[in-house]
Length: 252
Image (tube, rainbow, N blue to C red; front, side):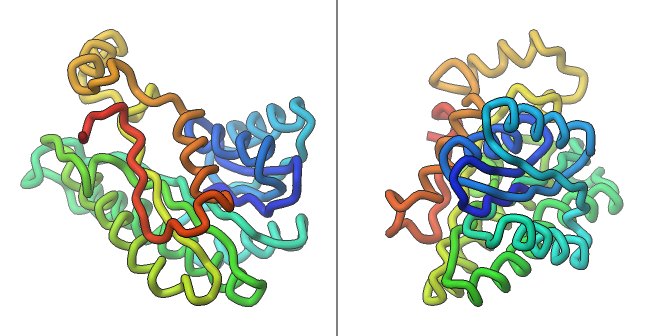
């Protein structure tokens, strides 16, 4: 979970990859914030990078399936930075990469609990603050594997990310009249370890990416962060309930 409070030159956010890129982009362009995620060492490295660039950041660990902790995270962000204008919900896991009939109940529950319930709980507490304080912007990180593209042996993840896209649209309609604009970004495959298929090496993945993506490469984390910043900006003031795909043409 990344939260950006909207004061120039400050941000907080995720521990690595796209979460870190979003946090650093907020620091450079959108503003102050507090962020939650795991593990703590990765979060602290994100803070160090933001501060080295002249920004101010705060990081705390949080389990996105813990409603009380998320409520506290929003409160800590507001107390530290004076408000919460932009929230980016980025947490997600990938488990159960086997045919759907072989997915364990434990893996299914873990993926849906983190990827769907975690986003809902985060929005629940973000919205509670925003609707009492003049509105705000929420951007959820979904995936092109869901509403836009399917592959074998990823049913739990695909189901969870399709649900994030649907949840985003439903929440956008529910809360736009309160001045809260909600959208999603759906990235494609990344260079992160989570994107490796079972038994696949990084060299194997590089070859697979060339065949799967018309652009011939995956979208960089900074490109995904740029899409998030666009949706959070006044330039997207009339964009409500959209799911912006950033996947190098894989789902075109």
